[in-house]
Each structure stands twice: as structure tokens, then as C-alpha cells.
Image 1 (tube, rainbow, N blue to C red):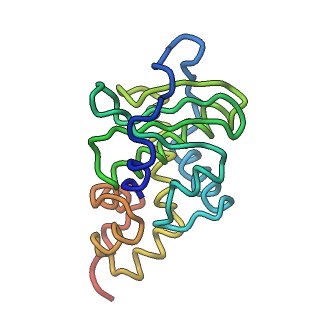
Image 2 (tube, protein in one colour):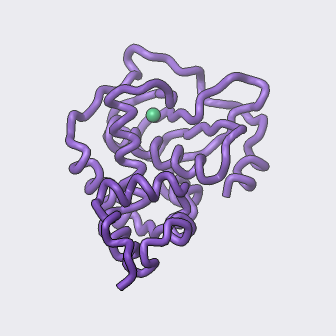
Amino acid sequence: MSASIRKVTRGSHLASPVSKGDLAPKATGCSRDYIDHLAGDISKKLGYKPGDDLEILVKALGGEIKVHPWQEPCHDGSIEVRGFGDFTICLSPFTSELRDRFTIAHELGHYFLHSLVGSKKINIAREGSNPVEWEANWFATGFLVPSSSFKKAFDECGGDIWQLAARFKVSSQTIQLRIKELNLGLQTSHH
Ligand SMILES: [Zn+2]
């Protein structure tokens, strides 16, 4: 995925620099569990299947993905939402495909949770640790690794972390965290 994005967009013009103030979003204040399930529901409604191409999904939502020019300092990712179905996700040129996938899902979290699908304009870079960023991370995990399909896949793969990482196209760390969060760790013995 990333290779094609990079080819098309490298060096093209970019969203304006991050401005705080009006465009800095507020946290929803929803619980982790709520956001986790919401993200799983949204991915299901969008027809997303584990491991699917996120570039196609973003396009279907009306958004675009760009890669930051390597000459300029940048964050792991950022999103500018201008309105409904009108947003730009910007990725770092230095990251891996799996990292990019998590970043895209994280930025989609901002789109759904913090811009409320474009009804609020936002412009936010991925930086620091604050409730807005935590919520986007919870969303990303719930979106890429929905708890319902993960539990099923966990059984099918006999709890094999590498198989699960390949199936969901996320890092092995994300899988390990998910196993912990969903208390699946104790079932790794064969049956
Ligand atoms: Zn963020």
C-alpha cells in the first residue's frame, strides 16, 4: 500500500502546518471500551475486513493520503479535516507499512471521534500523550483488530502471534497488547 502512495504523492503539496487554537479538537470523554466497540462497529459498517487496504477505504470516505516531504521535520502522522468527506491524512516518509496502517486508523479515529465525520474542522498532528491521542489510539486498535473477529481468529490461529499479526496486518506488539486487553493470554495452550 504505502509504496504506491509514496510514488504518487511524494513532493506534492501538503496540508497547511498544524495550527492549534480553534482547530485543536476536544476529547470525547468516552470510555476505552465504548470507543473500542464503536470502532469495531464502524469498520464493520464500512465493510472493512481484517488486513484490507486502508488507502482504498480512505478514498471511499472522500479523504486523501499524502506523504510528508522527507526534507522537512514532521510527525508520525497528521490529519486535516475540512468537512464531511473532505480530509487529508499526512504520513511520515520514514515509517514502515504496518506503522502507516496504524497511523491511518488513528487519524480516522480523529475523523470519526473528534471532527464528528467532518462536522467540526480539525487539524491535528500525532504528538504527545493526551486524551485526544489516547482516544484515537483506542479507535485504531478497535478498528484494525475488532474484538469480536479477533477472538475468533485467536482460536483459529491457536493464539499464534505471528499468524495473527499477518492476518490483521498489524505489528506483533499490537497483537500482544490485544491478547492482554481481551484476557486471551491464558488460553494459548493447545486444545
Ligand atoms: Zn492523533
